[in-house]
Length: 465
Image (cartoon, rainbow, N blue to C red):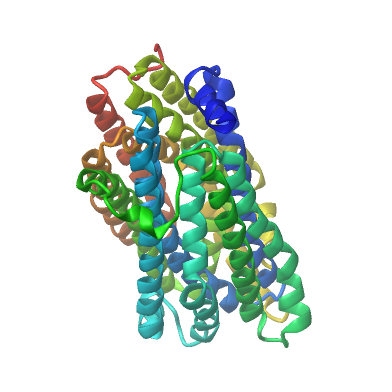
């Protein structure tokens, strides 16, 4: 019972900045490490100087991000409900919800793998693959998506469940373990074990092995956490789950999955528009999409760390503590975004050069790619504060169980603002306009998100609380 007591202390009594740091810092670290291992794939592939390999991995990033979207269905939906049920003292229902989330994630992963496996090449061509990139994209997709989805999706789902029951450090260690292992295995598989020309397949194999190890560790940690918290992955615990719990899980999980899925759809749209210009533009945008995820990873970590505290105190009725958590997280995120803008405006060129060698036989194309990447980064980094406000508002709405507002925000942000702006601004100003569509779309989305949050909380969340 000591573990349970410590978690209640964290959720109910610890000073908000300290509680938020306890939950958010491990999450931020794991977000960054996992981001780094995704970027390491791009970094080592960039050492080949092959822009077509870089473009291929940019295409597959869309399919990888869809796994994250699907993990939100049961990870965020189930995790936030578990935190609210803990705050209401309904521990038996917590066990049923966590078990339902785990096995729901297994079924979802298998269905996604089967879909991509059956229609892999048509999907990749739809995403913008060309005759020069399809082989590389297929290699990566087969190993990381078709074979590896069940391990990566389950890892993210279990991490959400651990985090929302107070085990943020265990969740972060599990995800970080896979990231660190991938960093170590990438050069071994790409440049030692695999023959020249198979670097993409080597990177994919390293990622697959790393995800299997991470999933195994998190599975063991969830089993151990069940001894001190109402967390279970026993299939028998699914029996008797309340129908209202299932509705609540999906009322948050579906909007959260759609939020990430629609963001992924927006990236598909960007890739298609970039590919219509050239493979070099596509490769340059692919580099930027990886680099700009650094401040996003920090800010998502802040939001994910705050979410269980917000959910628990919302359910227990401690609205003052809930509001203080929301406002503290908001300040931390906006400061992070401001620092990101300053850094990328100054160091855009050297940062993008890290991802593609200009010394190989394809040096001319590499230089063109880097030129596009540096320009796109300086423009798109301006979206960082607005992106954080979108994340922050959405996670807060999910924490209080307001799935309708989350779903509305997801659709309006991407389908009403960002995606239409891509086509309009690309048509008017070409590649520069396409890059400018992100700050413009995120600004419109953030204004709408803040209005939704104001309505959902009766205007009580403000900087003055």
